[in-house]
Image (cartoon, rainbow, N blue to C red; front, side, top):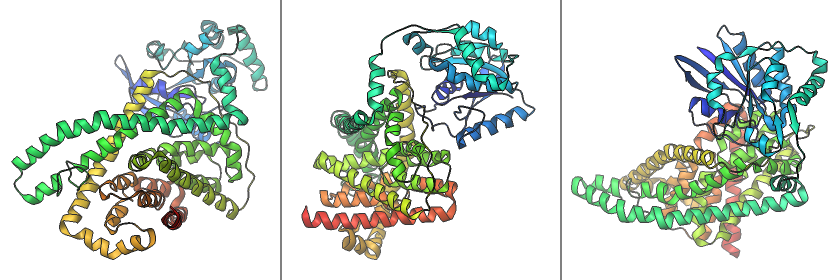
Length: 575
């Protein structure tokens, strides 16, 4: 089978073009680090089927980081194989000179090439004119302008895929940049224009004196808008649909068709009212679809806007100096920012860091700095009814704890020289609603398929524990620990144990216990920090090995337990 390799610098839209070609749902973000893992799919053109491989973003074929090493190694591996291979080199047409560096390096390798000039819509908006036909003539390979977001040029790309050629463009490597300048001079014209509003905003958001206050405003608005959107969905959509349409029908159906009392209790709970007991078809569905899903939708919607506009890499740049004080490279901000959404991709993204020391500190920050989005949704949904100030208090405590432990690790580990940050800053871009909607759909689908089955499993286990008396035995064995140390009800012991399976699910299962605000603060802090969830645990094990994994897990458990105890002591005495 013929192979198509997508190669290009970070932030040139490779993932979106890959999705257009293959139809596979791939989440693309406007910052480097999201495509460290290669992605494969298939494209059919006429009777021919191609395997499409999206290689990690790389500025050069002379690797300077792990991601570029992966690209160079895989490129060499595919080209040395006997299978027919085509390279589609994707460029950011708004920054032609920088991107052509990689193109000339590919030409040197004598690879069958097609050149794609992406962001063609932005070229027009910025007053840039590119004679792509002249560029095609100079380089001797097909050149196709595209706008991946709208799909412009994708059809032509598929139609010309078999026209990939080995370029005969010759140059002396030492004169590469001279040749690039000559090419750009011949094919590109830039007309004078005034700075746009987005360009002025870019300058403001990257300068520390104005960028940091703006970042605080953005974070505040993120939580505020998320809460408003989520509570509106709950109040006006999800809760009415559940109570007025679903619940009466399911109660009537189960009572009419299931005559065994034990099975009725398993399906509906001891009492059929949601959140009063642990029925599979009542609380088991109410928690994920009414309590949690609205917050997940709101969080991912806001996150998608921050990604697509290009704000996240600016936030990463602002954090660079601060991260140096914790002993890690500015590139660590990318895995950390990914960890805000989910810990697993954040930990996988630590591969771009050079040393084990940096990776361990970055992983600790990923685990401790903030909860992931599903956990955050649970925490906000549980605590916000008591007041938004308590939500901020919980997140502030968790954040400061992550900073503290990372600082301690930096002091313990041997010192090394931390190099400076060279991070690609894409221009601000207007939101493309179809892309944002597709990304939101994919993420919600992933949440439903990943979380809902585990919530139902958790509900079944707890319900069986309750009906068979196992919950009482667990409570008698370890329940007193939680009462004496953390001041929590003995009954939640089994939920804490299930937290290793899925931490966000275990936090959601606190709802039926009617904890007061003091207990909720202690419980959510402890359950956020005490252990990584099972998927995160095995990801750390895969990336760091058993020795470092044990160190990280022990550290998080000590952190969660000690912090929860300290907070319990403070708020129970002074609240």
